[in-house]
Image 1 (spheres, rainbow, N blue to C red):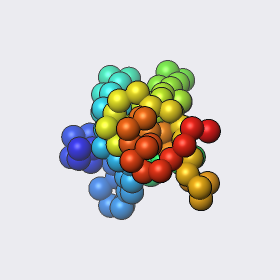
Image 2: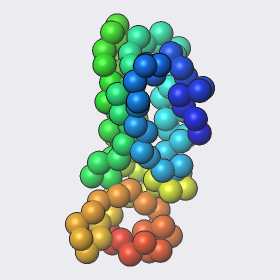
Image 3: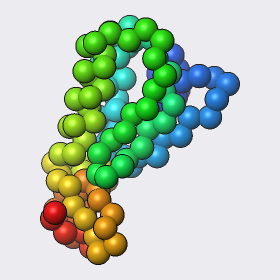
Length: 116
């Protein structure tokens, strides 16, 4: 999903913004951006990525309510239960190299990840 086109108010036009998550979290991010738009949050996304099996949503604050901060925190927490690949229910798993992801049982098995 092209979040920069769908939610341009959250992305500075003069800066590169990295979004490096897999499609499984698109629904979660779409819901988050919709909620932030409803809250009229004035923020600029700096980076969106996965780290240690959870969503990381880095942003510059212009005028953001406590509720908008809470929505971002909730999305980051919820990501640890959503498969990064397909969006189904998932859990945090690890591989033999210590990488941590959130995957459903099928994608964990396919990629050689084990329950933590």
